[in-house]
Length: 252
Ligand SMILES: O=C(O)CCC(=O)C(=O)O
Image (cartoon, rainbow, N blue to C red; front, side, top):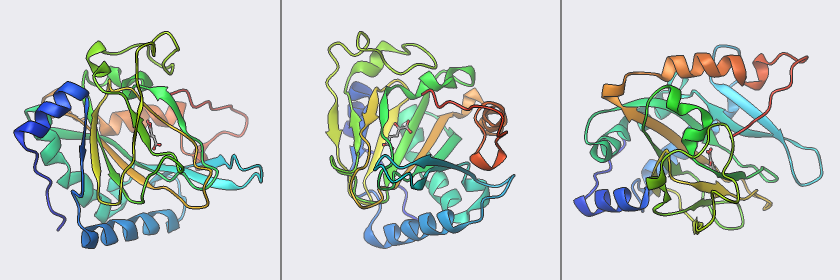
């Protein structure tokens, strides 16, 4: 079994003040060897309708290479990631002050040439239709650096609540926001709330930068994962289920 990260009162206060919390070496080297193996197993699984969801992107390196950008909806099809998303429920419950329910999860692969993410709040992606508050946890599988597009966070601005759904933050929204690099090593974990502005740059290095993300809502707000993925399948299905006559646009 993976160990369960436990947060101190001071760490809980930091999360409330900043909207995010970095927990270094939450998982040790032996645990990360297991998680890294799971990530390799995941990417090797066949892409099939009704299984985990695979999204591709074109490399920004100018060679038109086909990359895997992310894989979502994993835990129902992979016991290892089911264990990881279950273990992370406890520290998230500490931050929520009550039990947590898994809402979504993914691995962002950010392969060489993989794109970054414009500054946004996660709730801008229509999450407020399901619950009013979420906490995401990332587990750094690879080292994430300035060069390969680590997360950039902006402390304190989560307190301003939701800006505008379905659009990244505008220059006006970002006046006074100071994004700081949040480099992580394998085994580091970062908690951030759904209003915490964040961004990342493309990965123009030669190595893949994999990060696992799991998102939870308060258990008292209900269990929305199945409905979220059913709705998302209509608007932004995995590549294998796409209608070639339709255009699908990633918005936030
Ligand atoms: O993995 C990254 O670089 C950032 C991911 C992100 O912001 C997101 O998936 O919303």
